[in-house]
Length: 501
Image (tube, rainbow, N blue to C red; front, side, top):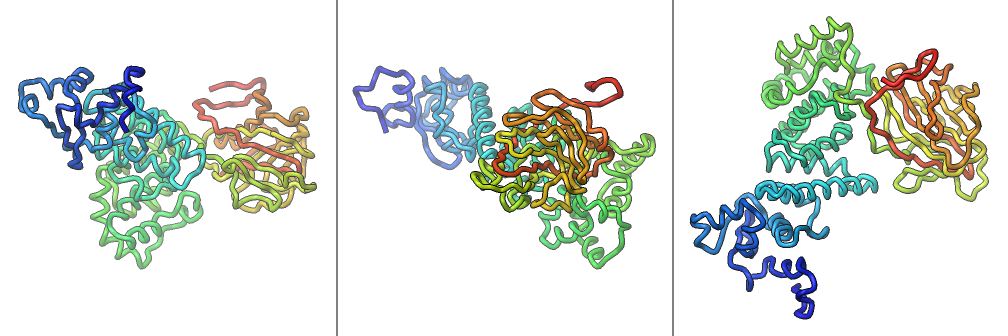
């Protein structure tokens, strides 16, 4: 709606915005990809964009007619362009995640670098807000969809801040939770090619990367093809199955019918999967029999592992504990309550519950590396406890420290495992911030209390290969899962001091 006459002259931005798509004051109409028309002013457009200046005042036909066509730019994206050109900004309600890629592509076309950065910042903030609130379409779902749109509109090999942002976001999300309808095959290739030698955070084991790519290819064939591949490539967590000797089954003949098609589709992606990060037994027993890889790719992996006597770390880049860490509503004691998007746990607030109960986080930790997360004891009880537990075997209604499958540090300053306690630090209370440093390479655990790091717990060596974050509390306890920290260093304990590598 146009501003009233009495408001003219008070705001240059508002007065110029009044001209956007105003047929009465325009001298050119812009025809967009979807055949919709938006009206503009030649002089303003040319003054604000060198691209438009060349198009509108270069002596070609656009200079003499009153319309110009942009067959690759949709109407809503062009609205953002004009709003920025006229007012040097855009209102938050003008842009949405759904049209952000179109708008960024249009800003790139018109060489509007500041607008590109504004759109990138908008997407970054929007994904973060969706992610924190755990909405139906959160960052884990939307970022892959946006990347799929981006590689359709723009070159995935370009030095592109939008694609970089989306790849960084997806790299911190396990591929196992990303649906095949969210991440296109072309977007997957872009992700893997740009993270192959990356030193940034990445949370998906390389075997799972391979499995996801093959199932993604099978998804383009049929549902039956997916079923066949899932039998031949078990999930990463099922190590026992993966290490079993491969045996022929009824699906082998069906697999042969789809193998050549799979191999063709995967030809552009397989070079960006680092086979050196996959255990030799898995390569031999599970991957090589699929006959999807070239001999050279397999030989390079075998030669590397034969020479080094081991594979590379299971994850590319910096192994990073998946950052969407929350308390698991399906893995807690009956008297515990979750609040604030499942980041806070309380023990029956106002109740008289004196029995310690447990809740674990939603992410399983496995693979070499240092995994760090923080919790805040917002309200202590008769000792609040922080630590880790195994994947199975925990009774959530019994104090974790009494159980053989849990290792916890309490606000008493003592550590407990299997009902055996030992002194670790001085007692602490409400307001204490605890950082857990879980070293899955050395299978050890250490704790920082209010920023002061202490050595690994001496009696807890050779921890299990798969663990969950856990806390144990009773009434009136309240514990907040504060954050998971990105890291690019490793803490190591020797006999005299702590060294930083």
